[in-house]
Image 1 (cartoon, rainbow, N blue to C red):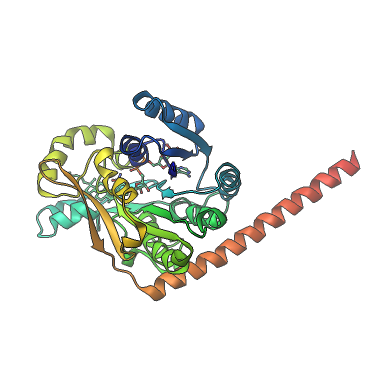
Image 2 (cartoon, rainbow, N blue to C red):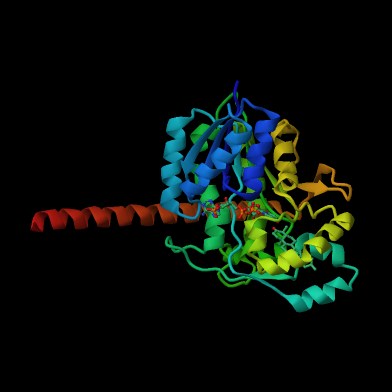
Amino acid sequence: MHKVVLVTGANSGIGLALCERLLSQNSQVQLCLACRNMQRAEAARSALLASHSDAQIELLRLDVGSLRSVLKAAEEIKQRYNRLDYLYLNAGIMPNPQVDFKALFKGLFSSNVIHMFATAEGLLTQQDRVNADGLQEVFATNLFGHFLLVRELEPVLCQPEHTTQLIWTSSSNARRSAFSLEDIQHHKGVEPYSSSKYASDLLSLALNRHHNSQGLFSSVICPGLVMTNLTYGILPSFFWTLIMPVMWLIRVFTNTFTLTPYNGAEALSWLFLQRPESLDPRAKYHSLTSGLGNNYTQPRKMDLDEDMSEALYEQLLQLESKVRKKMKEEEEDLRAHKEYLDQTE
Ligand SMILES: NC(=O)C1=CN([C@@H]2O[C@H](COP(=O)(O)OP(=O)(O)OC[C@H]3O[C@@H](n4cnc5c(N)ncnc54)[C@H](OP(=O)(O)O)[C@@H]3O)[C@@H](O)[C@H]2O)C=CC1
Ligand SMILES: CC(C)CCC[C@@H](C)[C@H]1CC[C@H]2C3=C(CC[C@]12C)[C@@]1(C)CCC(=O)[C@@H](C)[C@@H]1CC3
């Protein structure tokens, strides 16, 4: 049977490299590229078809940062497919990043240097904003939109006699200290990216607890440091051009500098080949690349707490009811307004 695979944020970087790798691994795979920009999605499909001319590739409009777009896309998925085998929750943003060069310089001369390069701990902050749905944008895109998609797709994802794998592209930048149950959207802090990725680690654990018995399995990965639009957006392009030789040099000493999207997609494509029942729900699967350029996947235990993951899950369910209620009210207001206009015409 052909495997049905949906990838969010599939038009560039790690998502696109994953699609390429999946088609090379299994030409029968039925791919659905879920993207917010259809022009970029078309370009990605053309690029994939150039090397896999017989591939089955469909496109789906999905802006994970917009609640209405998520609900619409979920309806479309339910109409198109009666099952999904893999759902890669990969789309993500890191808006307005700022590098703390003082901390970077200090870190270069400390014993912590490898850890600093692997996780960017203490180096990066971002400036978030409120989106059109009234949610913090990083939280909405990296976490909540994906959560709502999973909730909407439960009838397709949780089916007897069939297993589905959810795979989150998390990060080694995910840190417990950046996340708070009192502020899950990270209104107050300056590390919304780290907070959203830690939240995805917690949520994956909760999804396993609630849905493994229904055949739904969730895992998280870290692709390492990959040169993609997201990373290029951190510093001006001339800086990257200047330091690229240094990046390749660092790669000899740290296996987390995977650098190319192909290498970064290693853990994602490795998980495609695993039996979900054999995976560890408390592990993050890291894409790693040796100094000689060989790729491999390594599970590393995450710093997670069951109670915290359950509390986050409960809060997400509450937020879901709240936003659904708000959307319904807005639709009713709009309908009433239209009726009024029709009557006065
Ligand atoms: N690069 C790295 O070093 C690391 C990346 N990651 C994670 O990997 C994932 C992929 O990022 P990466 O490939 O690096 O970066 P890219 O910017 O190349 O890819 C991000 C993808 O997500 C899409 N996207 C962003 N916002 C939305 C949205 N609202 N709705 C739908 N799609 C959206 C982008 O689409 P568009 O082209 O329209 O913007 C793009 O296709 C992210 O989750 C990121 O956090 C994790 C660790 C390290
Ligand atoms: C001299 C140095 C090579 C200069 C580079 C310094 C920083 C810009 C990088 C050092 C560690 C990097 C890093 C990321 C971004 C760029 C750095 C801060 C990430 C945060 C990118 C996105 C992720 O999710 C993480 C896994 C990366 C961790 C390391």
